[in-house]
Image 1 (cartoon, rainbow, N blue to C red):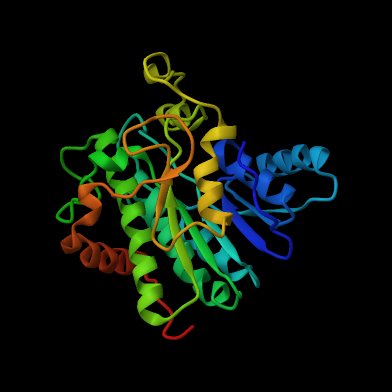
Image 2 (cartoon, rainbow, N blue to C red; image 1 turned 90 degrees about the vertical axis):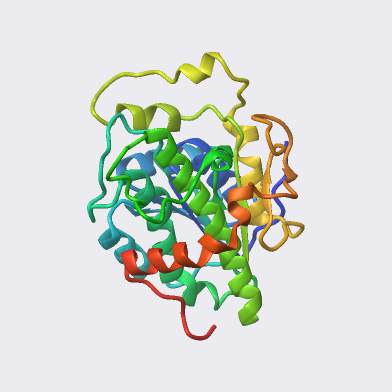
Length: 299
């Protein structure tokens, strides 16, 4: 098992941290000495997760705060209440809803929750993050980013909707965001380190929660067909990206490029679609316009 380096003195915000990889990452970060903020849509579930973590780590510093990434008003409220943060872990997401659904702001649910929400949260927290001595943003992508394409002409999938392809687009957008933020940080001389990770195929409620947003009880058929792993291993690429001094600027961590399970390692080559410079700037500009957020002028 990967041992998280000492995080004493660091305050870490982890989104989607009441279950799955986010919960595992939050607990291990807290166990390593970090002050952890569980940023969750359901405060009740967040408090239950906190109580469970505290039962195993009695001295852990963990608090729960409400955050709904599918509602930009919630994102702004959350960011406005954070006065100090050293690491932001963009983990929360939704996967393949049964039909095309939208966020509170009218965005396609996966594009809005998985990309636009974290994008806005990160930019709103940047002035606070940049006051840290060693600020870091770690963003969870997915192996499905390999199959994604940014539909700049119809990013909201108003025509020809495919839940799986829209999910792949949102996770590719996350990857483009993480690497673009790393480039911006270097160009501006910021101390900020931006990294990305993917969990391989990890058994969490992500594969069922989205599919059952209409109240159904669908099981993920992939679970019986593909190799998978538990959250203990699946969270490790994200933990490495978020906490390890060896994690490199703009690097992408996960099993191996096409593997679904296995040890954490750097993926030297991003998906081809993530190396196309022609889409980076238009995607960033689109996200700024849709979320009404901007980069800070100075650190």
